[in-house]
Length: 220
Image (cartoon, rainbow, N blue to C red):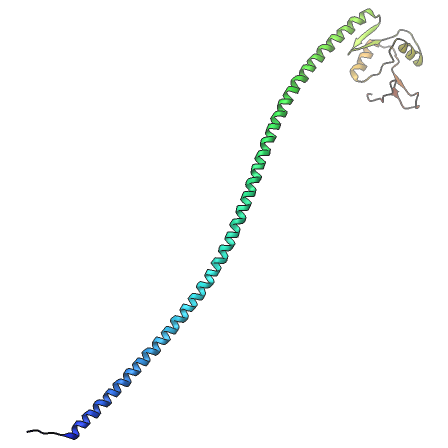
């Protein structure tokens, strides 16, 4: 035996369909919400990534520029270092040459000093020998006295200046020319208190005194 109810079955079917539609709508809303959220999140992340890419690009460009500048600076420093090295080597070479030249000059100076000292010694010996010869010669020439390699004669006769000079020139000499105080003291010593003529004259220009050899008076 069967019991069937057609009207009730249709009502259950309609309610099930509505529930399915509601679920489907809710699912679509959820999916749409999820898609919107994902889109917003993706957009924000994409913008952040683009911003980072831009920053990284700028940083890379800055680093490339810095690298180029550093490379140029390094090349310049290398060039300067090479130039300074060449200059230093040239200075070292010049210093070595100057040192050699200085040493050669020092050696030459030492040799010349030795030679000069030897010449001075020889000159002193020759001067002593000449003075001795002049002293010995003055013994044979009456009245002549030797001083500093020169012979001096004090006449006992009284004459005028011109006659006195003529007397001296006749003997192959001339009136005395006094060059320093030592010679002046020597003349005073050998002449005593006597007044003697010396080789001063103003014959060329009156009042302008010169020695008989034409030289100016430098000793007073």
